[in-house]
Length: 331
Image 1 (spheres, rainbow, N blue to C red):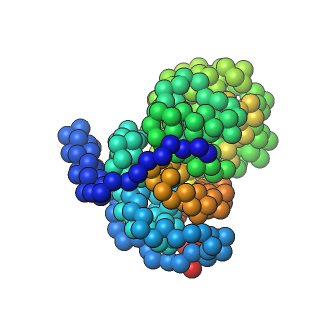
Image 2: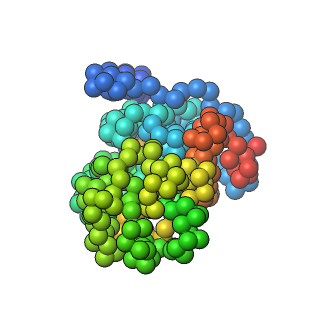
Image 3: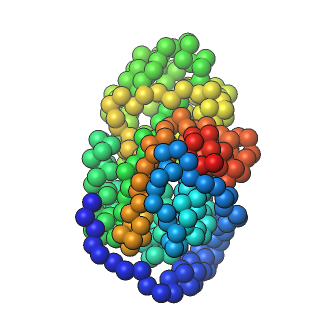
C-alpha cells in the first residue's frame, strides 16, 4: 500500500485531549453526553503469532470505539494488543454514535478505531448502493477513505455484522427452511416479520429484501418493535421471522438460527481496524501485529463475545483479554 509521507508533530497528545473535550461538549450540547469507557488496559506480553512483531515503543495511540458492545470489545482487543507491543495507549472507547466517533478519528482526536465496510461506504462516503462482493467493497472503501480522509483501512475480518432474519429452532424443525429464498415455502400465514420502524423504510431494508426474494408482506404480517425487543419477540413466537444483526449475542443466548442471505441482498459489514495515515506510516508493524487477531474474528467468535457482555453481564475488557489469551496472542 502506497501512502503519502507525513510526520508526527510535538504536542499532539495535548491537542488530542483538547480536541476530544470539544467533541464531548458538542455531544453534551446535543443531549447525549460523551462518556468514554476508560479504565485500566491490562498488561500482557505478546505470544504466538504476534511474538516477533517489532516493538511499538515510543508510539502514543488513542483507540476509540462506538458505544455498543461489539465495537467496545474490539476496541479493548486493539488496546491490549497495542500496549503489549510496547505502545502508550489511551482508552477512548464508548463514544456515543457513529457520527461523533467518526469525527474524532477524521480530526485526529483518536488514532485507531474498528469500523465496518458497509458503514464506511454508505454512511461516511455517501454511496447509495453497496458493493455485493466483500473484497471489492473493502477495497473501494479503503482506497476512497485514504484519498479523501487520510485513513488507512487494514485488511478486514471475516465477520460480517449485517442485517439478517432469524427463526427459532421450533420453526427450523417445523418448516425446514435455511435460506431467505426458502421463506417462499412457508404458508402465507407463517410469513410474519418482527422488525424495527427504520428497517421498513431504509433503502437496504425490508422493501428491497422482499422484492429481491419475490415476497410480499401486508401490514397484518408486520409487527414493529424496538431493536432490542425483536429477539425476545421472535423467541416468544410473536412472528416467525425476526430482523437481527448477525453477530448479536442474543442469537446464541436464545438459540436462534439466522437464515442465509443466499442472494446476497444485505450490504457487507466486515470490520476493519482503521488507522490515521500518519500513525500507519510511522508504525507499519501495527498491520502485522493485528493481522492474525483480525483473521480470527469470525461471526461465531463475535457472537460468543457479545453474549458474554450483553447476556452474562461481563466487562468488555475482561472478555477481550480472556479471548486474546485463549487464542494464544498474549500471555
